[in-house]
Length: 323
Image 1 (cartoon, rainbow, N blue to C red):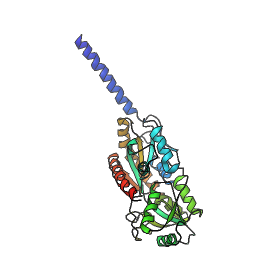
Image 2: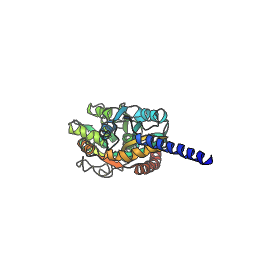
Image 3: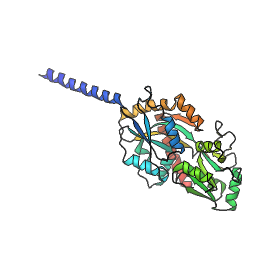
Image 4: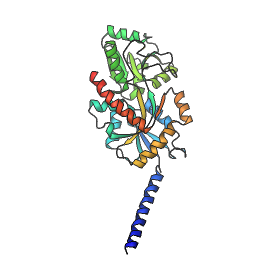
């Protein structure tokens, strides 16, 4: 009897293990959605559509990825929704933007923090740049700074929202130059902020290198400076950094982008995504399209992103105290 019972227990355990393995092996068995907390046409949306374009390949995830835009309040609307309403099942992912959601959680008024999410992998690092319209009287960053010093508060700067990379760059520029700018967060993210510059609704703007690169290629803007530690040799070799111009503005506003899942997602799902998503980002078709769109890539694994999130959170807590 004991031997029979033991045999039955072992059999049931074996079936459970087989079922678990089968379920793990089946993921994903349907298309996966990625929530983008910014509007269509902006850098995050534009890049998310490119880096996920080969998800359906059999050697990647074997299922397509589709984008769902949830814009508003500089990303707050989308990340609040993801943290509080999305399912933690691996079929709803979100694009993340660092420093955006980390800085927003530090400043408060949101329902998320870095502990609300699990990073999967990073696809890019997009520096902030200072842009003006093509017909602007300003040709250098010094021209713009001089105007701001002579006309306190009249040098309006558009950006994608509050406590996103654009806003952090604007605050750093104001502190470094001792000039008074007026930062104006726009509804609709980076695309709307760029439109404000092109239309002449603002004196200048802080935007992503990738958005600015495409706008300059179209003949719509001039790029005055990059908020990074060195020039971008691949896309903007002719544009100086703010550091070169003599202003103490570092790389704190560089926009890291990648994919994350909600805390509580099954570990086997996280492991599958962590193994396959970097391969998806590194695909030759993705790299070609990203380069054509002026989008700098920086592929990082889950472990590397975890370390980056922790470092950025600690750094931003100190930086924001001084700004």
